[in-house]
Image 1: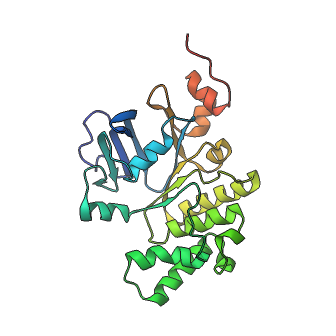
Image 2: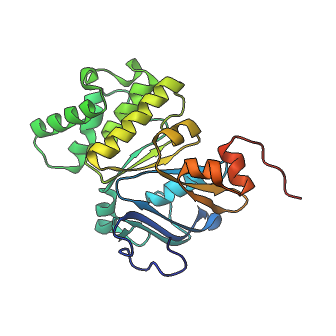
Image 3: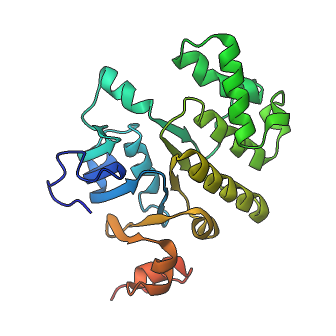
Amino acid sequence: MPTGDLATRADVDADAIIRVVNLAAGYDRVAILRHVNFEVRRGEVFGILGGSGGGKTTLLKHMIGLCPAIAGHVWIDGDDMVAADGADRYDILRKVGVMYQSGALFGSMTLLENVRLPLEVYTDLPDEAIDLIARMKLELVGLSAATGHMPAELSGGMQKRAAIARAMALDPAILFLDEPSSGLDPITAASLDALIRRLAESLGVTFVIVTHDLASVFAAVDRVILLDKRAKGIIAEGDPRQLRDDSTDPRVRAFFNREPEVAAA
């Protein structure tokens, strides 16, 4: 893992599609996270975990450029999101797709219209091509029969699938998912986990998932980082199954085994 100022270049590890280096993240110059360093490998499903208030959403917002970093770097496929602006920033953002916790589908549009929208805004493709691509994305998530439905007519799981289809509309290399299984029953959540694994393996898409759902983590995620509120940073990184079974850190064991933390003396 990169540390210190070693990572002023984005090509230290050719297998890393995301590199977060010495990131300090927060709001109004008040750091919630400090000295955050980790890499996401190309094609893996990567999880960002932590308790409430641990900084998961803050980290996500800084990784996708919604909030300015206090310090550090976020390299996205070789380009630094923190330093970029204007056309350079736009080019980086074209490499990522985001599915927010609510799904954020437009309720007045059909599923097909929702998925078409990024293509209409960001490309000059003819209408027939846009329609074909949008239908293909919906087919990838198992919604080819629901193209004419409004979001309100669908179950929560189908809405999440449609939101993933829209996030994939521009063929991003990386998909960020914010709490994808939130509000879903266990069976629907398991079906979504299987979809994420299938898309990662068949399309080579890299997934970065913010979640608190351990069942989904163990089913779908390759590696994780675990954030801690008191530490203001990462306290563990690796295969979640190994962290659950082998970690000697009581904070890590408590998180993965759903045990109450013992207060520090």
